[in-house]
Amino acid sequence: MSAAPTHATVIPAPSEALFPPAAERERIDDHLTRELARAQERVAAGSATPTLPMDAFRRELAGFDFTVPRPLPQLLDWCIPVLEHGVVHLTHPRYFGLFNPAPSFPAQCADRIVGSFNPQVASSATSPAAVALEAHVIRMVGQRAGLPAQSGGHFTSGGSEANYTALLCALTQAHPQFATEGARAFPGPPTFYTSKECHRSWVKIAHQAGIGRSAARLVATDGSGRMSTTALAAAITADRARGCVPVLIVASAGTTNAGMIDPLVECAELAQQHGLWYHVDAAWGGAMIASEKLRGVLAGLERADSATIDAHKWFATTMGCGMFLVRDARTPSTVFQVEASYMPSREMSVDPYMNSAQWSRRFLGLRLFLSLASAGWAGHAAHIERAVAQAARIRESLEGRGWSVVNDSPLAVLAVVPPPARGEPRTIVERVLKSGRAWVSLARFEERDVIRICVTHGETSEEDLSILLEALTRV
Ligand SMILES: Cc1ncc(COP(=O)(O)O)c(C=O)c1O
Image (cartoon, rainbow, N blue to C red; front, side):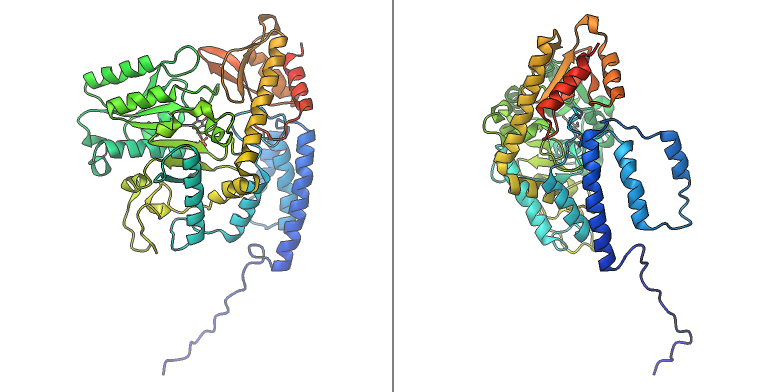
């Protein structure tokens, strides 16, 4: 017989602050739902830009030394105004900003569900339904993009991770020893090619992948923001001659500054001719696949070995939710395969931890699943076509007032320049932001400063467009 314990230890009950009883959770949740809805109404009627006095806020923050706990409802009532006044509002109908969306409601619902169940989507054994659902959405999106039935991929934290995955696939495909030896496996420095208008994640990615930032060759454009295929071919040939090892061509389908689409078919031809991996970075523009009317602008995407499409851009999910699509679903596991005895499953091309850069993973795909399932491709097409029509309306009005639109994008982004007498783009952007009436940005396009106006919000109205125009053109 074993001896009885000498000290009876009383294990304390769970912390009620961390794990309140069910009825209390429901009460707080209801309160939060109501307060968030009210805050969003105020956001739409208020300033698009932050108004929170940051010095006072930093002092207030310093008071949180986390020694004395405060009641959660009180903290929530503190947080909402902080967000209401302390950030640029992507949910403001006059946010004509970077590609960040006002999130769709189904995607917000998905976040609540996922936050509640918190499934671990690293392994198909722990989250079989979540892994299957994500794989289904990725297959449907890939096929809609024109990729073959055996295509695959996965959800990523965003476009940068998807692009990083593409470079790793290209390097692994280019040399069988890259996985073990890294860049040392190549007989010369590996290089890849994208345009000087590309998203700058590519430069960081070259660094992350260990091939160095100089491996990212930023090819000249044609003067209209599209990659020059003549310059591209010349760069590949010159690099080969000096002993470099070209591995990848990246075409942008919707450049970040100006929404320009590189010549996708010609880039595919060059990649094929030179035996290089072909990636299309369609982080924003890729959502055009939803529209039967407009998707023709993406012709050539179907020839990609891989593509980036961000759900958290024009598919309007909450952030961060990107997608890496790949022609052959088996490829990512050649990069990310790994042995780990503690993992409950190890299925190549299935288990996310063996097929993607992440390990522990949030269930991201539910956001796009609920959006697509509730709105259909048609609902997303309407969202995109509306934005394109609104951009055309802004263009028409500005040109009518003597402004120039210097990009010729089929997407919903304008790079505009005021008439000389109206002042510099920089001054006008500063004035608009200070007014809080709208959010636009300053960008460089083909060596000149431009005002960048991107329609991203699904509920921007005619009146919002008029207010934007008034804010831009006011003397
Ligand atoms: C063309 C393009 N690629 C990649 C990215 C990076 O995406 P993320 O910010 O989701 O990492 C962006 C972001 O705007 C982009 O416009």
